[in-house]
Length: 79
Image (cartoon, rainbow, N blue to C red; front, side):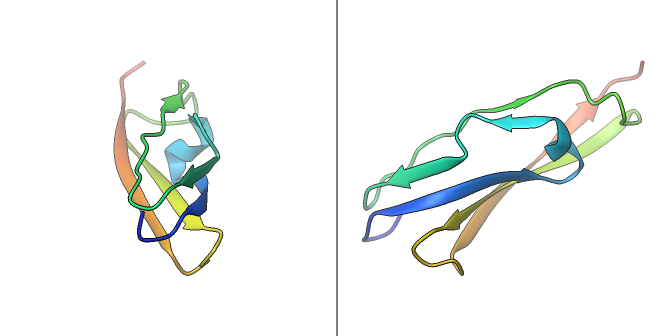
């Protein structure tokens, strides 16, 4: 993280966020610490074949202007 301990609220978004489950919705980190969070998805029956965007964001509880995230693209196969 940085030089101070912090707690982050995690959220999944984007179209694939509807079928994504985060392993943790809250993450507490010591100074300089990082952790991996598992993201599990279920079939997206509503989606057409092709790419489906997923975004995961982390927002600091100590400083709400501190936000970071990651993006991924799920491939929806033909049915």
